[in-house]
Image (cartoon, rainbow over all chains, first blue to last red; front, side, top):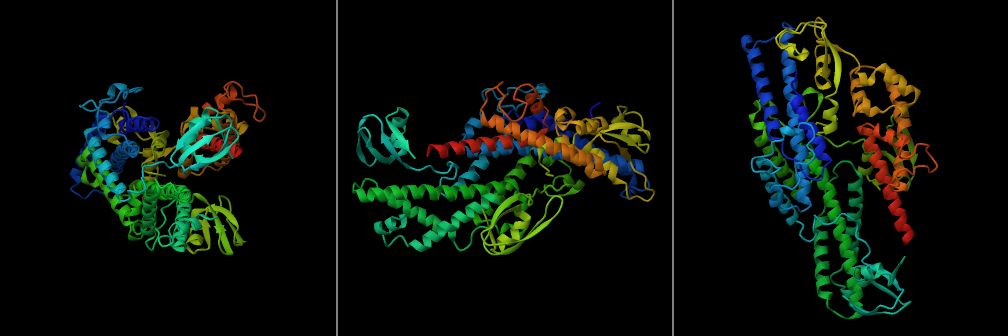
Length: 219
Length: 221
Length: 196
């Protein structure tokens, strides 16, 4: 027999799986709705249990009722934690996508292969009515977060905040010419690449020549 | 030849070297510390970032001016400035992102007291406040608004666990002593204390290192 | 412990054997019988998040009556502890619980288990060094599967090594990934140094 909290746990298992995926799987509309309903039902039980006492319930006089109330309270809190963690896992992922420059319109649209590998309980995958993997609320969230990030980035226009977090490599490197390669044009003028000569050049200008074996990078 | 000498030669009036060099050092130090410390460190005082921003702007302008100039001397200066500029931008970007990652992870914590809020820049504070509001709204519109009112909070601590997550101050860090100091650290089984000298390097919990760093007796490496 | 942490939430879903100490009319559903009262003495497996609070809730009450008493879950049973004592590396912890260490830690917050604590400490240290060995190997030799006969551990990747890695719990998996990434980064760094 299913217990209070079991459905919430299903949500968290979904969240765990989501953490390991590159894409965002469909929002569990039905599960979220069911867990939320459970909270409301539990709360109604609590109210009806307390009603006869008219606000003067004394837990030390009625252990059985106190225990039932405690179980109900804990179940509600558990469901709340599951719901929050599930939604938070997804907004974390959405934010990461926004940082990576994924187009908001692309996210909102239907995603190819988005429903792959739903595993057990896959039949409960509702998705949202529009066919997107995002709930309408998530679509709003992505738009608002994109605006927020744009505003923040706008304060640092010269930095390109979403740029690479790899430390910059040396822009310029020493190379030795292994084979005559003729003249190449660089941003700083023409260089004549004759065998055994050495140059200090922009890495970007000669990367292909290195790959092709004309030049050797010197340490 | 030093980079500064070249910059000096290119334009002696714009590059007031001592200040700019100090700013770069300060930025580098702040960057290293921020990436090592498990919690958000105070935003650097005295308009450091205003000056850094201005310096980056000046360098970008110089690059634009020098590009297309075929004089070999300015070519070399261009190379140097471009390399410097890329490094500068990387430092600032990496620093800001490290801070933002911490703020995003424990937003409610950093918004929870005036002292903690004061660690953020105005821009960061605005970002954190808005981000938290967006999240709260998202939870409300997705499910939370149909909860009983006493269950709608995001900041209570019922049932032995606080909803406000905090950084783990027991994370290990590495510090270098800047002054001879008495270093105390808590261990798993026993605690330790040592008299250490300037230049010594120690690994210990951030909670134990923090007072030394704040007193200027040690720096994070 | 962190409120939003998915692994912490899943750990708290692990079931603990509990015995009710009171008749509770409305909780029959916990014992699959919603129409009958739950009798004192009934044994029920409850998730940790429920068992924990029920176990400590009434401790300070006047008549000292508790709602439930509890036992260690099967994952931490005497059989498992004995097997760990014999050889920590031979027990696939994952089969006991995907959150084996986290569960053990939670249980030990609830009751004093000095023997369990000392066995688990030894277990962790022994297994962690084995994990580090595997992580270095995978990071070092790339993914040359089936060729795990390099010196060092006699457990190659493939065979016993694969079985050991499969049996890691979530915490150990994190450790393995970190050690692996570290080994890989070191190797890459060494290579860039060599190139210069």
